[in-house]
Length: 203
Length: 203
Image 1 (cartoon, each protein chain N blue to C red):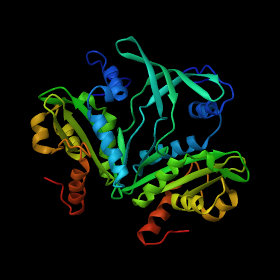
Image 2 (cartoon, each protein chain N blue to C red; image 1 turned 90 degrees about the horizontal axis):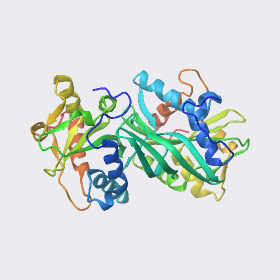
Image 3 (cartoon, chains in turn cyan, green; image 1 turned 135 degrees about the vertical axis):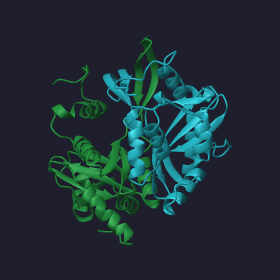
Image 4 (cartoon, chains in turn brown, blue; image 1 turned 45 degrees about the horizontal axis):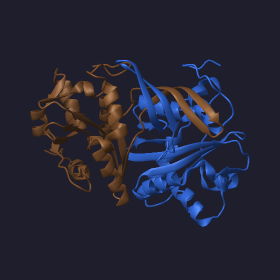
């Protein structure tokens, strides 16, 4: 699953969909991304963790300067991110994760993650960071946190191009929806940190 | 000058300058940003640290879809970054910093850093991350690493709007130019980590 230059076609332009969800989620009901962003804002407000979404990477080709202090980007392209969407600090630990939604009721397609993002997550946990993947099955309204090590092992051990929901139910942590924060994923991160500190790997 | 993707406009606004330096540093001699990026690539290659520059934050207003798999951003604006430019992991520690150049021979103007970036750096060191500012005085070819705590204290104690080069010479670490890596700033980070671990703050 190499995507040298651009995500492969997924029906009516995946880029379009992710672009819209980024720009107009407030008008479209709550996306996973929005839930995570609001949770991160809450964590910042209560001085618990500082975790941010990285800006969307783009390649800028043409910029216009209608006045001295106003630059307008007139031509740019989405590029493949070198890393994951979210990173930051919690309890002095480096936190790094990717978050994805799927409409499927049965499995999460690995084409949703770039191979170098998986490699990145692997580098992070090998260097004692806390690395994971959050996946929401939107149709079922089930959200999971899967440790990067388990994700990486799955990919190395299996020739499958997707991860079944059963795998998530057995091997990942369930993330429940709440109000503030909307997804309290740091309670799961506490377990991951505890597991690492006591030399255990969670369940 | 050959730009990889044909930049069309260039006149003399500030934005233009920083934009050009981002896109065409390879043709313009080594900038601090380029030195840091190359050093970070080297650290990744030797599996020493995973530190990346965040994408330039922009607000996308209009996207065109000339064909199914090709999105072209037709209107977007540069926005103020919420955090710093660089972050990542080294020895299991969360690393976070901002890097700036100045042509001045005498001082670094604090107008080069947004107040919320300073607040962000403060949040990071309070949460036991390694946070700092790298400043290069390009005319003098002197590069410094200043711990975020010292930067923050300076700003709180002083009403000045700039930091003199003498302050850097007394309170910051000198970063020498090398070949690989071009700026071996992790040797200084080792001192910062050592100072924290032994309850000392280094000097």
